[in-house]
Image 1: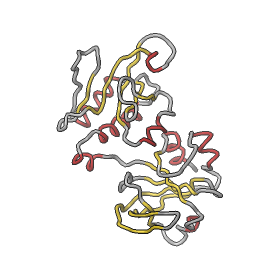
Image 2: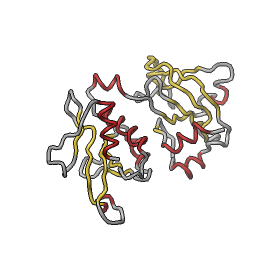
Image 3: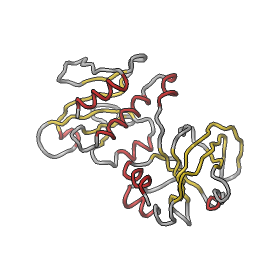
Image 4: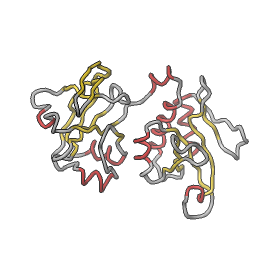
Length: 247
């Protein structure tokens, strides 16, 4: 897996590993412009991550800027708070096959973006998936798409054009009902009342609908480890797969 990861990084980012402490003590992957690390590959003892068994294991340390998404990732098997680095922003990912190669590459892309220069960052961040809450007490979300497939919605600054938005309708519905795509972002808007403040809107286009009980809160909690949807949050890989492949 280590060599496959190096090959992926070389092909996509034209970057090769550096060994500042010798080849046995870790490989650093850097940006060519700001020289910041975006990955550190190490071979460490399993006990360092609280794993059972004997012998060392390869891990890759990666930076995740989105704290909510990082917390979601840490619920996945094979992903841990970073060993030997800042655990607030970095994770350690097993390279023994526990985490699939495609997922490791996706996380490398996120780390590359998180550590990029501001100029580069605006160009390279790949599309992301979000669960965004909608409160039916304040907005008639159940009928929002009755006669149109594009609506305006409050935007989080983390959401970019092209991102996928899964609208979670709060109680009494308590379920994901819509899959949408952000087709326009950063629309200035000023609104405030005792329940809501809006400074920026996005336009989202309806892609698909889900049945009322298909992705209920109980299912999100029991199967995907989502215990609250109070604001925009990342989508776990297992849930992403289920949402995309739902009948």
